[in-house]
Length: 450
Image (cartoon, rainbow, N blue to C red; front, side, top):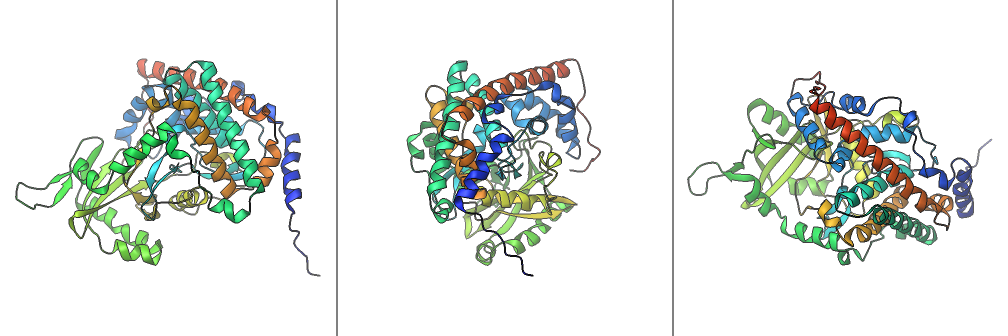
């Protein structure tokens, strides 16, 4: 007997979302229980340092001590564990995994036009959609406090973010599915922090990067350029180590689409460097390769960034282990972004997985200072729209909108959660600072290779 697959109707999908309110009510998302923590925050951070470059452990801790938001950026493993013990909807989409205000930014799309979108997917994985929203809520609260906003103003920004998310998801639920795949947020340039990021991105050309991070190899006219060292942030790599990095380009090239392989073949590598990036990624291996194409005025910079398992993976029992963590990150990019870096790919060497992408190609970041005044609320709405688009592209907008409904209860609950968890983040940050002052040593990695 042949079994006929049941194809769910749009109404059945919407009702499925509504039914999940019995699993966890929309107002229940405001809660956070510190007593439910099974492992102290500092211990989770120490565990996350295993396998990283030991010499960079202190630098990561130093960056996390600078401000609560810096701590928050480096403490994804802590929040992943805290979210895992809370009730969740079970409504799954692709997660950015580290959804915060500084992980949205400008970059160049395949057609050369500037794009503004979520642009960091190191922690990406499929999981409950609200986990991204809760991390974004906390980041808006911390960014608001860090840029001089009153508590009520920061909470109002979180509510605006969630209201915009819900409204956009309801709109997606009414749109033809193919239109969701190519939906663009058109008002981005009118939002001041986004406008500023796009201006930065416009100036951040490969030629600009060439001047910023390289220098002539000698005083001779026309001498080739090489990376300019600024230890520990940027260190040239030579000999066997450089050969290993360049050797990893072959499997990377093989996984690219044929037309990308064709254009990459016009570039030859001229130098390699080890680069320290971000906050959460400090201690992971990150290499930059400088290429030259049609002469010295045609540079290409690729970044080869080590990727480890997502911090959420241990708490998602149904998650399939990643075949390759670089590939996991690439697939997260492509699932949630409207347009992705044309040279996005992955490779492996030395028993480690790597993501490959362009370095600083028209990149334009958002800074906390950009959130001053009306910038916070306006940017919060953009965050809500872009997360809604990413979740609608990779999940089911009918199920999510069915769960959210038409009221404001979910947005208000997320604002309360954001405030509570921001308070806890500040306490955890204070504990880290106190531990450092008391002379506690960062955990040492078992690995001594860089």
